[in-house]
Amino acid sequence: MAFHWQTFRTRALTAIVFVIVMAGGLLLNRWSYFLLFSLVHFGAWIEYQKLVDRIEPDYRQASAFHRFGIMAGGWCLLLYFTDGQLQLGGFTLSTAGWWLGLVFLLMFPLAEVVGRKGLLLKNLGYSLFGLLYISLSLGLMMDLRNRWPEAQHGLSLTLPLLAIFTIWINDTMAYIVGSLIGKTPLSPISPKKTWEGTVGGAILAIALIGLLARLTGRIGTRDAMIMAALAAVAGTYGDLFESKLKRLAGVKDSGSFMPGHGGFLDRFDSLLFAAVAVWIYAVIAFG
Image 1 (cartoon, rainbow, N blue to C red):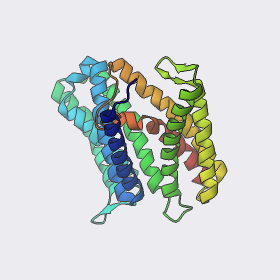
Image 2: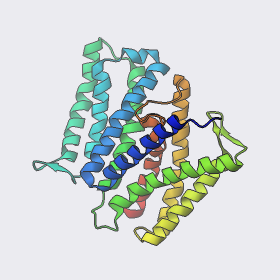
Image 3: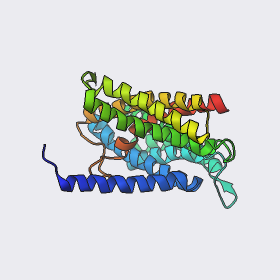
Image 4: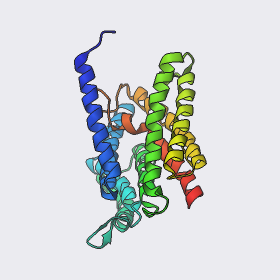
């Protein structure tokens, strides 16, 4: 295949901008972290609804209130999981998330019934699944950043970075190993993925995360490697799940916000599953 300089330049510049934005959002403070994942939340929801539109034609009939209301309701989970760490005028975002979420929970079904003279349960099911798939997962990422005080073993920053770095390392190493020695297809959902690449990527991700934990001392090596293993496995399922959604919708990418790289769901599909696995272990291990 001929090398296309313009394509390479576009992908490279997009990747650089993406890394800068991610680094700023993750590392600056809790507010930048909240704003970063709020952007990811709404971007992922817009793409998810477009995919569902293609999968289920009836969903195209969902009202604007339904579409934006369910996104706003999901965002309340992100507000709630700021855990009292973020305030505006003495009013915590978590409190706002709780009350706004309660209002949404009470008003949304009623408004849908009145507005449509009936409620399509199938459409409601897709939207409720989106709350679990996108909003709850990103809410748990928010909780990983805000659950512990900054001084408590550095957990409030270390755990989100561990989840994200594991995904990045796993994806990169799986691609390299798969390209070099991959022969056995992992799943018909994603024909380019191989068992060799998947296993090799996970092993290398676990090893590198364990090494980083040992060198930095921010978290126990055993805990880091267990969470890396959980993130690598769960992240692979997240990747395959989004690939299935795209196949059902008949599209290559979920969106185009990153030229040459795809959309929000393409970039964060693995993290949506990995966040849940890391959060469960972290809550059990660290309280």
